[in-house]
Image (cartoon, rainbow, N blue to C red; front, side, top):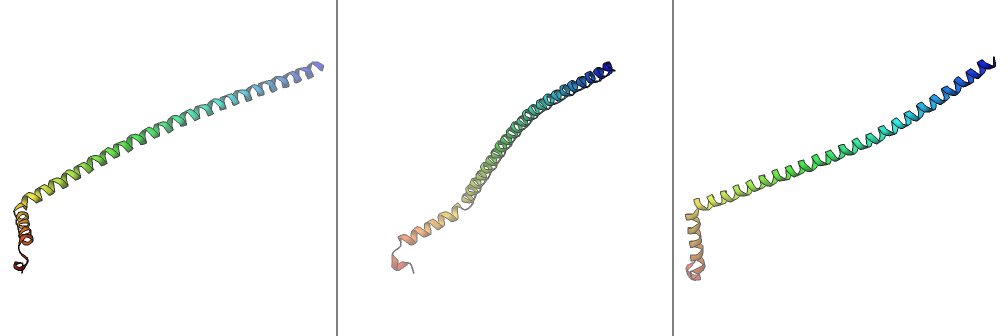
Length: 108
């Protein structure tokens, strides 16, 4: 009988030891998983920041190119307007100059 009790107590102690080992292994696995999760999140955050920087720079460059194109178009439109209306502009300048230079009594 004593042997059976000793065997049962031994089995209980072995079971307790195995439970403790399993708990320790689970804790270690959980800790490694948490460390890995933190590493993965940090890498994802870095990737996201890199993507955001790249897209922001690309958007800035596209905006700069579009702005430069609009400025060139406006300058070309101004040049063409001046070319098309050069005669009328010269006539107006001459008329204004004549008005300024004419004696006051002849201005009407």
